[in-house]
Image 1 (cartoon, rainbow, N blue to C red):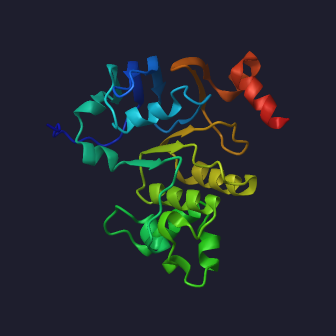
Image 2 (spheres, rainbow, N blue to C red):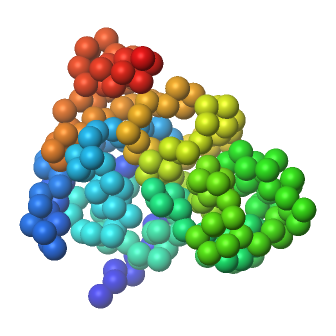
Length: 251
């Protein structure tokens, strides 16, 4: 039975001794995860394929419950929240963005009631897709094919990002969703995030270091465990995995 308590997503996001094993496969994906993310912090989570990055987001979204330990927002265990109310306060952009055979405006406002055109355009601007939308003959009323087949990969990713931002979430989860975005567009998105998402906790899972996005903290996972955690500057001076990733990317 779903717990009935409703909370507003205000407070720090805390992982306390979190362990998780996928029930379908028996594979242990996370081991003894302890993280304290302050409200409004911007966090980059990196690691090889299978290191547990996406699992971290899935547990925050309550796709699964933790095996041991708990995840808290402030003093509230997220397992004790109303699921619909809880997820409605989260902006989530998955790796594979799904767009419906509908207008661009409807895709951005999907799942939200009473979204104004002004809010849709604000979100599109935040995702650096508004200029391209307005260049289409029908603008925001342009019909896109099923799964967005009429759009480029980068356009689909940014429309999905706009869908997450139009909710005005207090927690924004991005699962490697900027892979098809070029450097100039990433810079525009970063500028908006810095200006307009103050107080919003942001967690980005990625395989690469993003040159234009500023992060308060970087977490490196390997085989389900945290092997490095700290500010980008401190990890660069550490000479470990993060420094090697950054050097390889620059080369």
